[in-house]
Structures are given as C-alpha cells and as structure tokens.
Image (tube, rainbow, N blue to C red):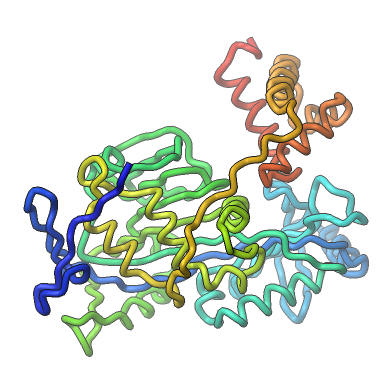
Length: 421
C-alpha cells in the first residue's frame, strides 16, 4: 500500500514540495499558513542502568526509608523524598520535583547483590530544557554511577513532542487515524487527562485528549497543552518557551497567541521499542543512552508519524500530519536510514505452549483467589518459570514488567470472566 501526501506549494516563490498550501488529488486546497510551530523537543527521558548496587549507598537509602512517612535522603548534595517504588517495579523511589529527577533504585524482583537492572532515572521537561544534549547524557551517567558498580546502560525511553497553534483536531479524528495500536482513548475535560495505561475507547463531547497505543509500546497522544499546564502548574515555564517562537509572518515578534489553545502532539517510545528499532535498522548502532538517541530523534519522529497517521481518506495523509512530520526537527536532520523494528525471534519452539500454560495457570490462581504475590511465588515453583522468563526476555520485558502482567492477568480474569464465580 502506497501512502501519499498532498502536493505542497510555496505560494510566494512557487516552489513545489515546500510551503503551506496543500493541493489534494481532486484539486482541493488546504492552506496551513496560520499553523505555527511553537516548540519541539524531548519532553521526558527514562534511562535504565544495569549493574551492581553499591552497598554503602543502598544502606543509606534503606536506613532513611525505615524512618517512615516523609523520609528523605541526601545524595550528591541533593535532597530526595523517599518512597516505595514497588508500583514501578523497584524497591525505592527517590524524587525531587524542584530539581526534576525521579530515581528508582533496586529492582524489586532481583537480588540486591546480583547484577541487574537496578536503576531507572526519569527526567522532567524543565530538567531537560535547561541542559544541552551532552549535559543530559553526562549527568544521567553520573547519577547512575552514584548507585552502581560495573554500570551498563541497557535502554532509554523517549517522549518527543511538538506544540503548535492554528489547527485543532476534529471530533472524528479517531475515525481517520491509522495505527496498529489496539488501544484508543478519547477524553474531554481536563480532569480526565491520563497519559498511561488507558483502556477501551470513549468519546464524550468535544475531545481534548486522544491517545493511541499503550505506555509499554509506541504511544501517540494529541492533547490541549494550554489546559494541561494549569493542572501541572507549568504555565509560566511553558509560556516563557512559547513566547520565544517566531514565524516568517510574525518576525521579529512572537507568533504565540495567548488567546488560542496550544495543542501538543507527543510520541512516546518505550525503551523496548527504541531497542527494537535500533536492532532492526540496517547500519544503525544500538540506542541505549541519550547520546546514542540524539542523532536519530528526527528520524524516530518521522518513523512514528509514518506508521501512525491522520488521513483525509484511505492512503492520503492529512496536510497537517505532513507538515508536523516533515517540518519539525529535533536538532539533527534524519540520517539516511530505513528505520525498521526488529522482528521477534521465533524462540525455542515452545512459545505457544508457554503462553497457553501461563494463561491457564493465571486462571487457576484467579479461581483460587490468589493475590499477585502468591501467584508470583507459585509461578517460580511451577516448572514454567525459566521458559516464561526467556519468552518475555526476548520481547524486552523484564521481571518488574512481568509482575505487572501477572497482576493485570489476575484482575482481568476476576472482573471479566467466570473463573472467580
């Protein structure tokens, strides 16, 4: 199937292939001269490090954690609020919102003394905005080295975003959106904004958030950023960025209009997807750190918008999608590579049996009203454990995420099937 774009024309110079006038196959014209790009960049980075935990640092964290509610710990001259990181698959969560760092420490499902994926660092948009690409890479590595010996970066998750004005998604956007994702969600009302793990599909009145895909894969989100910044208390920060934006028509003045909504298109790459792309693209080295990712940010953006796209009609890309795909840059031009995700390995020949056995065991555990921890312990003793871990490890899903699959599987069987009746 050939995907086609409207023909572009710059009405001032007559140049074909550029400009804001788009001419469709039936002669229809779409003028996007009033669409202004206010900002594009990396909104979030999540870096995974493998290594051996340093006993002195871990002991300091554990001692502080035992103090109970409102526990804090100071590391590298930075004070962190200390909480349980179990929901994220780690034992400890260290957070400093003012600095803009959240650090998860000690894989909950691996021995503290073993080599494992024991550190996950998440950055805020402000933290990223205030640093160069080299500084981001170096500081993430320094933080990782604070906690780990024999440190090895094993993956990075990226959220790429562009903010724009002058176009708003229509209510029927999901009907014309092409995606492999099975999960599509639409919400209206800022109180319903959710950015991860959305299930099902609902449309209530005027859509203000559209999410395609799950958080543990490649996720596309379109939402009204000018409303979200009030919820997240980022108005002053974001407006300071938007006011710096200029266009050919506004220069030297800002093209930001505070009276108009600002929409954001955000592409969220889970570290598993980034690894699959770097492993599957010929001539491309692995992307395991931010420094590895920087030359490919524009290429990854275009790859995502080619596979997930808003169409006017079948096989014809909507002009706004063409503009956002081709006119947005993340500091480097896309390299001459054909981005592809690595195809899954066929495995050791018993994957279907492993998958069926896993599902059947979860059904039995749900019927006997096991909680997730009981089911987890039983799986380890079932004789299936090694094959199950290998099955998911080939899909870049490790023990912390596997535990979440067990939880979700038990809940789904209890709520949606007859196993618990």
